[in-house]
View (cartoon, rainbow, N blue to C red):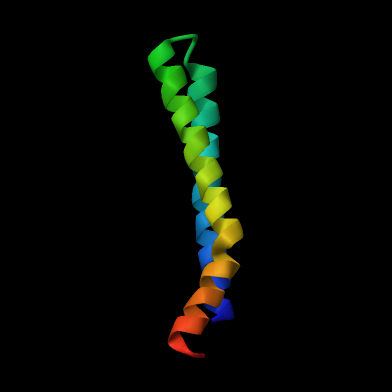
Length: 70
């Protein structure tokens, strides 16, 4: 179960970092265009959600342990 938690945290943090990078690049390349700035903000929000889920991964694994009975 610890391996599952570690993999889950790693994957979620990795994806969140990708979204953060994409958002940053979009924001820099937007040139003030409102549509592109909004897409960048959405990528930043997605990154925040991803980091939040990565932080909650140990809790999810604990809940799964309780359900499965391990």
